[in-house]
Image 1 (tube, rainbow over the protein chains, first blue to last red):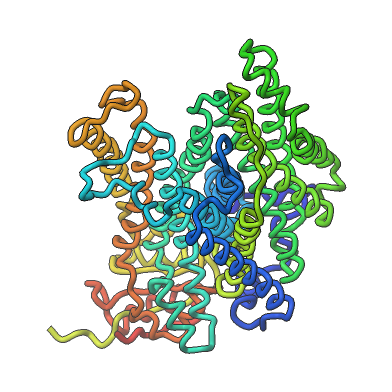
Image 2 (spheres, rainbow over the protein chains, first blue to last red):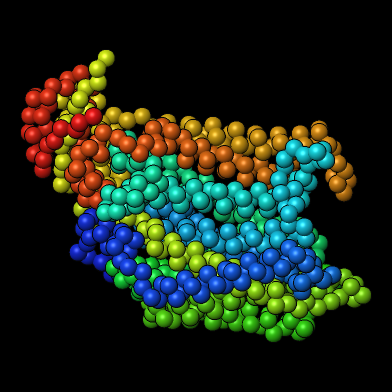
Length: 457
Length: 177
C-alpha cells in the first residue's frame, strides 16, 4: 500500500492519476463532494426514484408476510424461483468489490486505489440486497433465525451436513468481513473529513466515526498490517462464498446442477457480473462528480479486460456443461442440454449466450474498451446475461427433471418482479446516500500514489 | 503527581522525506518517547521511531480459536448433544464440517485483526492532546509532524525545542496537555 509503484506510471498507458495533483488537491477534490458541494436536482430525482422503488419492495415483502409465498410464481416442481435467482445474482455482484479491494491489493495493483472504496460499498449493499431473499423465501420468515445454532427450548441443532447451512455461515461471514474491511478503510478518511469540515456537529460525528484517528506512525504500522491480513483473509473467503453458493446446487442430484464445474464457473461469473456493475456505477459517477482525473481510462480498460477474461471462463463453463451433457452418457443430463437449446425456455437460453458470450467479445476492440458509453451498454448487457444465467440454472433445471409426470412451468408474478426491482432501488438508494456522506474514493490511498509520497533517501 | 502542563514539543514538516529524516535524527539523538504523524502510511517510519506490532499474533490466535470453535461446535452438536441420523451418514461426518470450520476461522481472524488493531492502537480515543495544536488539522491532509513527549527522560523545554529547530522544520510548537 505504501510502496510508490514505479511500474504503475508506465508511459505508454493512461496514468492512474492525471498529472499535476498534490496531497492538497486530492484531499480537497474528494472531500468537497461530501462537505461543500450542494446536492444537485439530479441527485434528488435519482435518490427519489430509488427510494420509491425501495418502498415498493417493502410493500411487496409486507404483502408476502401477510399472504405467504403463494403470491409468488413458485410451485412444485419449481420451488426455487426468483428468490434464489436474485440471491445468487446479487451476491455475485458483490464479489467484484472484494476482488478489487482485497485480491488486487495483495497483487499490488495500485490502480485499484481509486475504485476500491465505492466497489466495497457496492459489495455491502449488494450483499444486503442478496440477504433479503433467502430470509423471505423460507415460507415462515419470522422463524429464519432457526438457521443459526443457538440454544433453544426444542433442544435441536441445525443440520450441518447441508450446503444450505454452509451458505448461512459463508454469507454472514462475508457480510461481516466486507463491512469491517470497508469501515477500516474509511477510518483515516473520516479523520480527514473531521479536520476539513466547518460545521461543529459534523466534526463531532466524523470525529467519533474516525475513532479519533491521528495518523501516528505506530498506528499506521499496525493499521497496514491489519489491512493486509484482512485482505489475505478476504481473498479465500470471497472464493469460498460463491463456491458454497454453487454447492447449494451442485450437491443436489438434479440434472443441470449435479456437476463439478459449478464452483469455479460460479466464481468467475460472480466477478464477471460484479465488474459490470462497477463500471455501470463508475462511469456515471466519474462524469457527474468530475472525477475523470482519478478514475481514468486506465481503470475502464482494466475492468473491461477483467470482464473479458472472466467472461471467457464463464463461456468455458457453459462449453463443459454442454460437452458433459453430450459425452457423459447420462440421458437426463443429455436431455437437460437438449431442453435448454430447444425446450420452452430456449429463448432465455439463447439470450443468455448472446449477452454473456457473443456480445462481450467486442471488448477485444481497444476503442470500445476505452469508450465509457460503449462500456456502460456492454456492462448492462452482461448484468442481464448473468441474471438470465441464474434463471436458467434454477428454473430450467427444475422444471423438467426425471419423471414427465412432475414437469411444470414457472411464471413469475407481479410480486416477484416488484421484489426484484425493489432491491435494485434499495441498492441504488444506498449508493446515492453513500456518495453524499462518505468519501467515494479512498483519499489516503490516493495520496500514496502521488510522486511526492515517495521517500527519497 | 501533578500532570505536566506541556504534553510535548511538535515540529511540522513539508514532506514525507523530511519527516523520515527528522525522525531518524531525533531517535539517534537519544529521544525515545517520540511519535510521528502523517496523512498516509510511510514505509519504514514506524521502525525509525521504535514500534512494536503485535497484530499478526492476535490474528493467528483469533484464527485458531475460530477454527476450533467452528469444528468443535459442529462435532458436539451433531455427534454428542443431539445425534441425528441424516441419510445414513456418520454422526461425525467431518468432510461436511470443513466449510463452516473454514468460515469461522476467517470470521474470528478478521474480527481479531480489526479489534486487535484498534485495541493495540488505543483507539477509539476521540480526544488527544495533539489536537490542541491548531495546525495539526493538516496532519490528515498534506503536512507531517514529529513530537517529542515531555515524559521522555531527555526532554528539556529549551534544549529539545532547539534540537527540533535544528532539523529545519516549517514550525515548532508546544503541545499543551
